Image 1 (cartoon, rainbow, N blue to C red):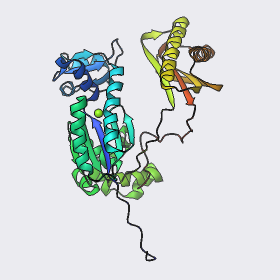
Image 2: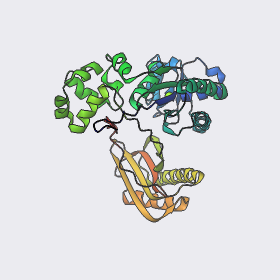
Image 3: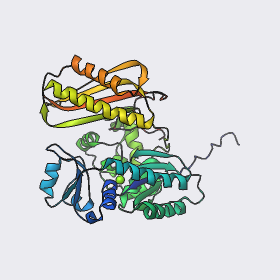
Length: 366
Ligand SMILES: [Mg+2]
């Protein structure tokens, strides 16, 4: 190699796959009479929130995480269906099993219904992906929207661009042009607070961010975040598909229909939650040595306490006992709105660095 020649930058082909209205689709497979209807999947009780809503319900402004009561005011004709978590997990395993087999690549899962893969090594990636979408649809009844790009940022935005049943392939330059007039929130990593701060600076679109001076962004957001914003506006992003992500904790929590200040009732709930968490651990053959509780009061302040044991466990009696002790030591001083039990510090899991802040995710490569 001549002395000054730099190696050509490695081009990666990253795909983001996202099941369309996944929970709703599974509900339709379970009960075909729901097809095409305004459907809200949510728990019952006065504090239930919307898990997911069909496109027909979304037209009325219904969205995920919205209180179910509000959703029903917006769309009174909606059919309310309780979530079937086990069915979603089963379907997810089915879908991603096919994907993994066909792509011969490990996946980075973001949730039950979304994953990235690096398909650079495939001979004809687009052809493989199109066949894959058809096969998944035929064998599982689930439609996947696909986005392909040189990095995760472009791939994810592409998969979302023409939902449902989208199949969008974009170079970085094409993404840069196509989404110039989109709000900055389009760029994952820019959350509501960052968007708000950008708006205060007169930056509302991606193009504004492309034109903004790096120095100004750095002054406002700091070196790393400022540089990241600049790079994201140009659709530079990470190409690392992190397939090593494993669960680091397991928890179970419950929101009471009305606030509880009866200590015995709280103890009973802790027992039930501990049992629930341990069931999940046993099922997965996982044990942890840190046991914690979470208490949210009627005024929304939240207390978390945990204790680490000398040995790993997934034993119901042990977890229950520790959780009850933590509850007793921190006897609630106010009515309780939410109670949770958590087991972490799993066997065999090396402690990774703390996860990046959700508002501004920094790129591995710019
Ligand atoms: Mg989805």
